[in-house]
Length: 253
Image (cartoon, rainbow, N blue to C red; front, side, top):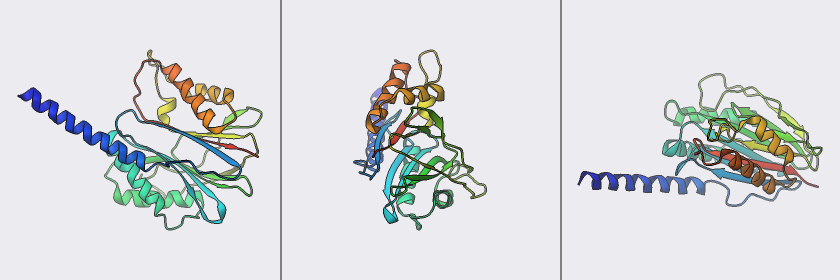
C-alpha cells in the first residue's frame, strides 16, 4: 500500500511538473518574427519537465526590436515561476522604448520586490534598429554572446557592467553597441550549453562553442541546429544537468 501511495504521489508530482512545463513553453514566442535585415533562430531545451531559461523578441517603438534572453536561478517549478515573473515584467515594462540598461534596471527593481528570497536571473537585453543595423545591448551577469563576422572571425561581445537581475546592489547597468552588416551573426546562449558535460565530466566549453559557431552555416535557424548537433555529439549519452537555450540573429541584405 505504501508503494502504491508513493507511486501515486510521484505520478501527481510529474503531472504538475508537466503542466508547469507546458505553461512555461506557452510564454515563449510561438513563431519568431520577421525583422527587416535580421533573421532569427532559436532552440530551447530543459533538463527536467520545467526549467529556468526564457527568451523573447519584442516589437518596440519606431520599428525597433528587443531581444531578451534570461536564465533564472535554480531548476524545476521554482525556476519556471521565475520565468513567468520575468515574462510579465518584461511585457508590462512602463518604458518599453527605453535603452537596454534602463530596462534591466526596471526589471531588477521589480524582481526584487516580487521574487522569493534568493531568486535571481542573469540576462541579456538588446535593442536592434533595422534602419541603422545597430544593436545596443546590456548584460546582467549573463554569458557574453558570440559575434561571428562575415569572414567567420568569432569573438565575444564586449562586456558591460551590471549585476544579475534581482540581486541587491547598485541599479547601474552600462551598455554598448555594434553594427551588423549582412553576413554577420550573433549567438546568444545560456550557460547550460557551455557547462554541459560529456561522459568523462569535461565541459563543452566556450572554446568548443566558438569553434562550432565558426564552422556553422550563415542562416540563423541552421546555425542553431548546427550548434545543437555539435553539442549533442560531444555530450553523448551523458545527462543534461541544466537547461540550455540558443537564440541566433544573422544580418541579411
